[in-house]
Image (cartoon, rainbow, N blue to C red; front, side, top):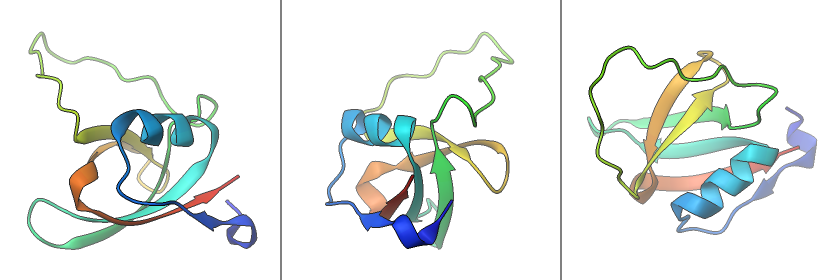
Length: 93
């Protein structure tokens, strides 16, 4: 990720736009976590960088248009972001 080639993204961000953006680029997303703390996450959905999700149980999760699963580049794990709590997004090539 090269911060010299970064650009800010207009908010609010809907789920389909966020997916499209993250499938081709890296992003630094500042958002508020469920516990009220702030988090800056470097993430992506680029196929070359992610590990396919492996379902561990038969439980089903109801689709939520404000929750997006992303690949956390620093933790090397799947995480979720509530799109309604995003404060800023910077994307990188």
